Image (cartoon, rainbow, N blue to C red; front, side, top):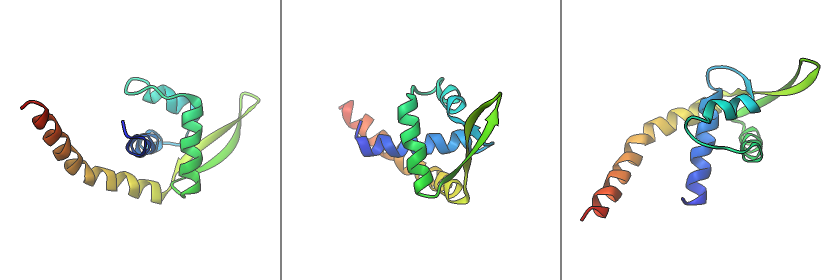
Length: 104
């Protein structure tokens, strides 16, 4: 898969994973596991990129005597999710074209 396409899809997946509530890295990986495999190093690269772009914020809190980073989606991150959903029909049309062409 094209690296940029995959990167964009993974960014949206992480945003979707934290949309309902603030959460931490291990939980994001666990929630995504039924759909895709993601290593911790990949996740932390993505959340850093999303934080830098203003799509999420990070807050460190203590949990069971340890510090844990919690991620919160921002309005900019929610907007990106909405944009992705509106682009989905176009993405599916392209996919259908590719699949159709492969069957000839």
